[in-house]
Image (cartoon, rainbow, N blue to C red; front, side, top):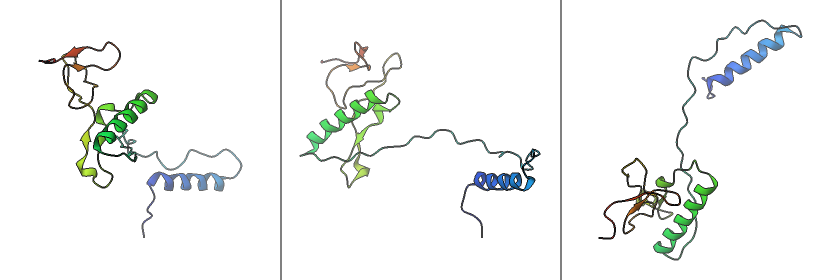
Length: 133
């Protein structure tokens, strides 16, 4: 029966056993070559935070506040990817932020469905769009 562990654990066990068998003297180079596979590139993951709210409007306000606070603490978080859904229906997730593309490649950091201009993140961020008209 085949082991269910990744191959690098088997390689580590074999090289450690070979080093023990060689004795206390200097060990020769290991007989096994390093793995030919490249390490996996970083992947995206999603953190689901559960909280209680009186209704959908209050839940949206709380979710926007949580997402903005987390993005201040951890700038690598993708604020535009934040979404809100009922706890028992993740398939009904809706975006929290606008994320419209601007003329210089920036993305709108305002809440989804906001009236007026789009605004780039940060104080004094560039505004673009149709405006209040």
